Image 1 (cartoon, helix red, strand yellow):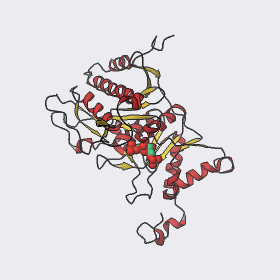
Image 2 (cartoon, rainbow, N blue to C red):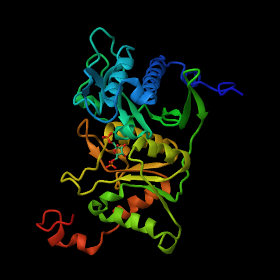
Image 3 (spheres, helix red, strand yellow):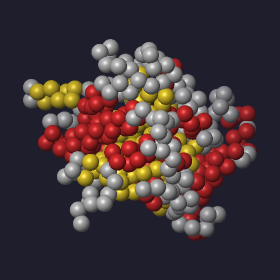
Length: 358
Ligand code: FBP
């Protein structure tokens, strides 16, 4: 049976959702379809790889044999801007690739939403042909009659209207939440349509799989060390079960694995750099992935509190990030709130001391 028979397309799904809100203008659906179109275009560029005249890895345009080629993450950013600027649904956009918010050109109407995105997450994996993806978050614009300011984007994740990601792997999938569950759509390459293949996704609350970059272990804080040590101890330790470890270094791919079969992901704040903030970005990585996780019955945390409740202080703010199966995230949070080992409170080793623990 062809994939599309008796299957719901993304367009049909959105129209049926909208019927539940008779006063909805349809702007939101148009916006999501524009985002989906951008993802299809990026999927195509990713799939063509070196044959497509674009290059992987981070950076700007480079010169190859006299020809200027754009790197894929720069190109993906352009695709997001071009596909979403004209529709009249947005008051502005912000992205990992741009220092300041993008203003909707004057010749296009402005709208009531803000779009925030990481156009190509995990882009260092492009050169080695490993899954990458795009992450997006939709917020309400405080004022749709004027250009969006930085301040307009600084909303906690609880304010997200919709969020999701596309993963460019063996198949391209779009995963979307509009705040009432999570649905997964697979791109049918023949039809060029996303088809609902994974309705009402749910993350199992328990897992025996964790993902962390263990090369950072000397920089971890005590609760993270404790959690990982207990996982590694397996059946012979306090957890009384063996764990598997995974690390793709492409957060969107890790999030997708966790959504499909459970697991926990940690990129905690650590002492690797003096700011102790974590590596991943709050507005266009942690919040959208966190919204998806929570809508699928999982959890997202900084280690200490829900990520979604953090009030952002800047557009490109970094944050410690833990997400996935609920009971594991609860446990990691609990470890952060329990009293820390004695040496952590020794004034000789506290953060301001000459001998601070690293
Ligand atoms: P970018 O923000 O530079 O795209 O990096 C994000 C990311 O690639 C995540 O997808 C991934 O989880 C993480 O960085 C990998 O970091 P590391 O190289 O430290 O393991």
